[in-house]
Amino acid sequence: MSAGGDLYGEGVDDEQIRRERAKAREIRKSRWWQTKLSFGVCYYCGKKTPAKELTMDHIVPMARGGTSSKGNLATCCKECNNLKRSMLPMEWDEYMKR
Image 1 (tube, rainbow, N blue to C red):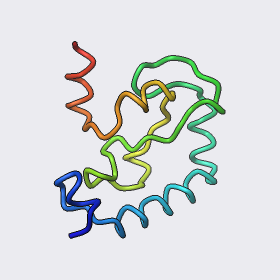
Image 2: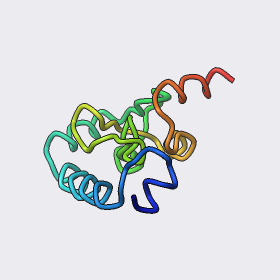
Image 3: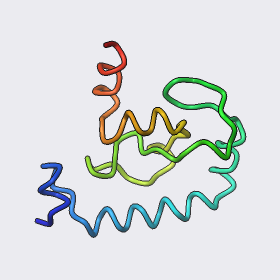
């Protein structure tokens, strides 16, 4: 197992993360992603945010086994993305209740 998998304890190796990042780069160029950005809303906090300030977030983080697929990607403001880091959705919900 690689250092990436050991670091997160989830069995995700560096090669898998590299493949998913490459997929994410391709998806960023897609019409589907551009349409998501055009709504200008953060998936987590719901704030209206200019499209150029939104980031791509993996709802289930790649480091936790998430994939770069349409069902696992969301537009996210930088503040939420920095706070969420590698949390799973249920961990994020618990964090936000504090």
